[in-house]
Length: 444
Image (cartoon, rainbow, N blue to C red; front, side):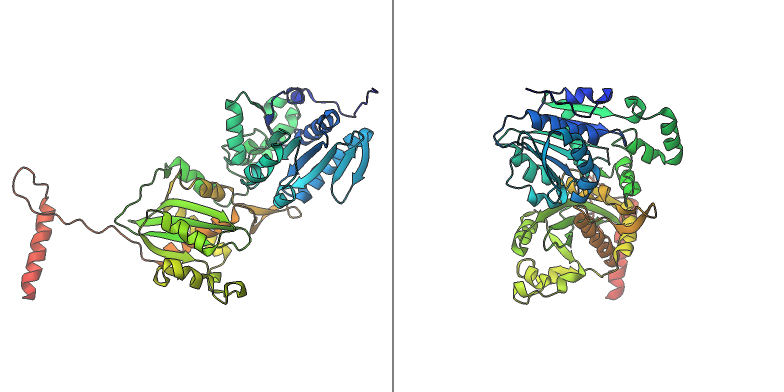
């Protein structure tokens, strides 16, 4: 067999990655560390040596356009000595062995369904919608017992952080972290320049691989960190003496999100969160009614009034009224996205979240980000539309609804005057009882 040399000289920092034997791998690398180049060459080598009948490998980025701009040139360049054909429209390369390497975007995960992979690289996995791996990628690895690499730079404690935690604890995983101050891949002068030009959080996230730094561009980053630091993300109990309200964002082709909350003495106790894709109105109503709560109002976005032909000319609110009762439904005023964001910011310091039941919703609030304008080198006012959008929009409904309604308070507890050692009535209680009796007498 003729030896083929590829034009790739692995950096010393990545040699443990290339020599790994585990099926699963997690690679946490600072910006400009060369992880994409290393991963592409790892794919090419694996494809050349694959013994499957129909070898298929994938590089997946958060968006297809991103996969093309970041990895397509690298793949064509490094695979050139062993390339049989290139399909530009499909972003596919077929090697001389018959193995295929293809680029995908996680934004169109349905294109991946039905395929069977020998190996997959998921780049910037923290930007994927959390359901893409368990529902799409993982099943595609089963029949060939394919391997997978999760890699990226931290963006808060999201699903990539969960993978990183799992990888650190399991011998079935290869886990490598390369912060810039230890990797030796960037000159010290460049690191010092970057540290001087970036905020502390930006430098910690992008160069030191910190999962604890605030997410760059996060809309509620400061408020969510304060909630964590102040212990307001904890266990929140349901108070049976007060009603539970819900706030909704209704997805027609994608997710619907629902928050469950109570208002107690000016505090918003967020008890629960639910998100689902492709559910019917009845399905969503069943979810709400299955919870052990006594409900007050269900707050819907303003477009719930719109009538659709598919529902026989009925609006969303009319359809929901069949299950939840029309008197329990309310439409939230349409204040616009920016006004709603400001309402959330004013409300968040009053919020207490149940850490377990609201886990997915909390992660969406942490990752809710503004779009970055590459031309102006600044963040736009417009939020990025991704999997975080619906939970964040439903939370805006909560903030606007809470501002509109009177704040509920727990009813005062009546005390009975008891004579003897069991007495726990104070002088203030006795004076109040006296005042009530005087008022009753004056009315006779």
